[in-house]
Structure formats: structure tokens, C-alpha cells
Length: 431
Image (tube, rainbow, N blue to C red; front, side, top):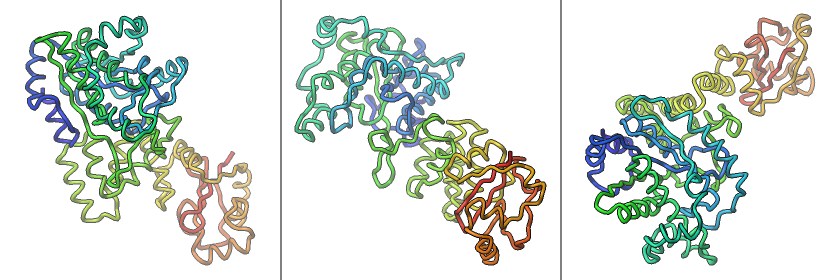
């Protein structure tokens, strides 16, 4: 059992509560099945790329024989985690939080194996124990174990107090008590000995470790590990509040756009992202990066990253469609386009018209098609475009203005791709 060594080899370890954490995990795992958990606050009905490191951590735990538990914070979501935030979160209604919990549950079920014979995953809602607990019970049984001085010293609290004139409400100040009690309940009820989280969660994680030690005495052996917050080389973070969220569900971020996001990765970031987010062997990543350095203009590393991530999140079919649609939009052939990839093209803002199949059967002149599709204002302008080598049918340059479009030009039996110049695309659907 070498979870931390596994994560460290990928650059995914920021802080650990014990330098010998892998040894501790092995010793505890030899006595009984153990679990690791990460929490996801239901601030939306999906998760985004900024959350993916925590998901990756749980996936590595499962690969190392440690049962992964995902807490979807039906209770803490009503409060809001102040960690890394400069201002108070907008409180959500109970109905919104409940709906978001269900959405996040659906996302997590795509990445964790719930039928694993050795380390089956589990999703837990902390409203299950907080919902029945009164405020008096919480203050007596949990609050008495926390000291104001140490709570004020936490980075999440201190940074807010220094950065905001309004400071922090008692509601958000109490968040570390709630998360600490989450860890305790998971420790007691599920054998969860390790909490994973982003580096901004260190204060909350150590609060839970301290609470377990106080409540369990010498037998309280809990561990914590944080992973880097994902940012570009320029320091830009991924997340909703930063306005650049790339979501893990197709209804919020289309697979094509998801693919394009990774394809646009800067050279300064691509090596790190390949190690962070993909499960490619490190030797294979090193070989790929060596090839990339020889011909960076080919963007081999970015293409592999985009393909691996789209396959992992949206499946092989969506990845292949995104690759085909992307290749078409950037001048490649249309041989790989199928009906779904044509739909992907249509969904990227490519202007689309629909014509009857009879028009093709009658021999539709390409100059007429260019005008009807909006690539030229007149037949004369269309002919000049052809003469200049600037009109393409299915990314093949048109050299003859008398060319008639027919069924032979149909892509996937359903559409024709016209292009004027380098990037001015039109999609002609045939009904």
C-alpha cells in the first residue's frame, strides 16, 4: 500500500500530517479495512476541473486498496466553506443544496467503482448526522473541544480577517468544527483514517485530526494529506468563483469545448497536467514530452492530454467525436467525422443551413452554395474566392467554379462542410 508515494510521483502531494504516512496506512490496513475521504460542497449541481484533483486522489486511493469515500456536504453546503474566499458565500436554500447533492453524486459515480471487490467506493451525505443534531448538542459535544486561539490561527480565518473589512461571520467561522466532526464520524463509522483535500483545506483537515485525537485518546490515529490547488503557470486558478470553470458534465461544458480547453494548454503547463490528471505511465509521459520538445508546433503533448481527459470524463465516443470535429475546424480532413461529430461541429457556433436532398440531386453549384451559406455575397464574389484558392469543400480546396455538389460530398451521409479562408466555416445539413 503506497498511496502517498503514488501521488508524490505525480507531484500531487502538498502537505502530509505524518512523514511516515504510507507506513502508517500499511500498518492500519494490515489490521482492518481502511478508507480515505474527500469532501465536495454542493455549490452547484456539477463538479468542475478545479475539483478533479480531489477525485483523482480518491481514484488513487482505490487503486491502492483503500476504500474511497466522497462526502457530499448536504449540511456543510448550507454554510459554505470560507477557505480561499475573500468574501462571504451566498447562502443557498435547502432545496437547492439537495438538488446539487444529487447532481454531484451522479458525477462521482462515473469515476469511482462502487462494485470493487476489495475497496468499494461510497458516497455519504453529512446531513445524515447533522440533520438530527441540535445546536446545543453540537456545542456541548463538539464545540468544547475547539479553542478560539487555534481556530483564529487557521489560514482560512486569518486571511479573511486581514483581507476583508467585514471579517467573517460566526456561520463561516464554525465551518472547521463541522468538517472536523465529519472526519470523526467517518473515522468511527466507516474506518476512515485519511482525509484528502486541496492545500486550502489544511486547517480544516488538521482540525478533524485534533478532534479525533481528543475524542479517541491514544487510539485516535487519523492522517491528512493535501494536494496542490490547480492553476496555470501564470497563477490563474480553475473554479467557479474565478469565472473560468470547466465542468465535468456535458450539459454545462460540451465535450468539444472540454477537449479544446485541454488542447489550448500552454507548454509551461502541459507536463504538469499530464502527470496530475492522466493515468499514463510516467515513462510514457516522459517520452511524449521529449517528442513534444522536438516539434512543439505539432502540440503532441496537448493533443494527448486533451484526448486522455475527454475519454476519462466523457467516454471514448465523445473523445473521438471531439478529435474529429476539432481536426475539421482546424483544417484537417473530414474522414473521421460521423453524425455525432457533425452535431459537435454544429454546437460550436458554426453557422448552419439546411437544404433538401433534392437540391444535391439536381447538381447544386458550389458558387450557389457559397452564397446561400453566407460565405459570399454574390456569385461573382464566390468565383473570386475560388480563383484566390480560398473556398473549400470538406477542407479540400475548390479549383473549379463549375463544381456541382452532390451526394458524394456528404459527410456521414448528412452534411457538407464549407470553408472560406482559414477559419470561416459553414455547415450545410441535408434533410
